[in-house]
Amino acid sequence: MKVHPKQAGITAKRLSNIKSDLGLALRITRTAPRQRSSADRTDAWLSFLNSASVKHQKHQLSRFVDFCCSHGLEPDQVNDNVMSAFEAHLDARILTKNPKEIRKDASYAWNAIIKQNNLSFTPLVVPKADRYIAAPLNQYPVSLQADLAKYLERLRHADIMDEEGPDRALSETSLRNVEAHVRQFLDAACSNGFDRTDFENLSDALRPDVMKAAVTKIQERQGGQLTATTRNILATLQAIAKYHVKAPNETVNLIRKAKSKIGDVQIGMTDKNMERLAQFDDPRNIARLVTLPNDLMQWAQENSTQKHAPLRAMHAVAISILLVCPLRIKNISMLDIERHLRAQRGGKHKIYALHIPASEMKNRNPMDFALGEQPSRHLETYLSNFRQHVSNDPGTALFPKKSGGGPRTPDNLGHEISRLIRRETGLVMNAHLFRHFNGMMYLNYYPGEFETVRQFLGHKKLDTTMTFYARFSSKAAIARYDQAVLSKWQGGQDD
Image (cartoon, rainbow, N blue to C red; front, side):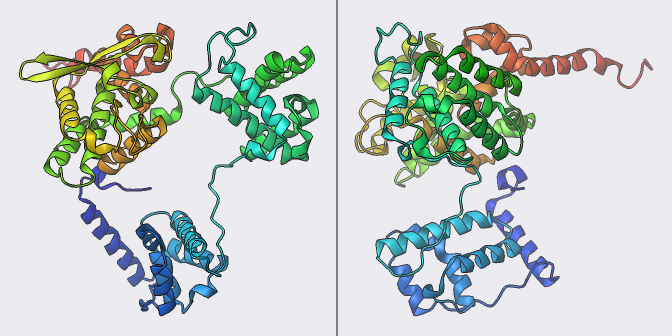
């Protein structure tokens, strides 16, 4: 379990000292192996490190180089066995970070240096991620790639006169999911007896023998379980069979029946999101999150000449908006100063509001949000002092790319926000979780007010809101009942 200094109520230096002292105690008592005395880096290693093109490569190799020097190993002796010994060495000794991640970073850096400098040393195998990665589509016949591209264009509404096309174009995220489902299915089939050349088009993937082989392999990869992921893959295949391939009813029904055997897709909030929201049972974590924009903006203003100041100010504004405007990260990343911002005077300061037209919202409902005094001050400071330094071509994007013009992508901005929140507060938080956080916090104060939550989250149906957030309202209602009724009986009826 990782310990974050903010969550432990201590400074990062104090936590580092505790880990260092604990490590020393374990080595003294022989619970952990004693460290070898450090050895000077040899000329060969110094020459190798000096050939690194970027500073971080030297940093990623630092531990590994020291390990090799202490064991009398030179660069020309490095291979995967040496790297495995290095990982085992770390696993037995360090209390911080993940030895596997350190090995992966060191392997990447090693390979990059020998490639960039055309060195004759042995390349290292980089450990694969725990998550299985399916083969890319370009490894399949061109005809299959073209067939899938045609289907995706239909879902994208490339031909709006197509009478059999979907009523509404799919988002780019949904289109990527469809493509990923096809990739996973084909990869599973090819891992269980089929060859990639067997699939000239999507019809070839819908044969019963192919589907049986693929689903069997998917189940094996998921530890013997058939999860919602498998159901979603089969749902994609069912749609392809019915609307694109025009497969016989027997084929469509076969996929439908297989899908129905997996069980229902989870309705409401996932267990992972519930676990993350449980962080906010501690009022100190609520305070850490809601005060973070102030802390970031204050740091940016006090250190305005430092290169990270503009990004800190940008992230302060993004988090401020997420706290008061429960928009999806796609809408946040695409905010435009001219299209979406409205400003009016509110005393000494401008008060900003956001207007998102229906065409840009997932549920096609236009949304308007007033930012309030404090978020508006953050926004004004960012626009006046920092935005022009975030990008070499900021244009009218509120959160512009570093270069090349245009807004930051949702993935980029969302990842930056998650990483920043984790580093500064110790909280595990992604951009979408702000929507759940906002709904939870409102219902904690106003149990049963689902209609208000429905409106500010932009849900079309009240049932959707209640499915996701009923447990929070119930929890708050029980707490109020305890305070209003049960607490009066605590301690007996002596008076």
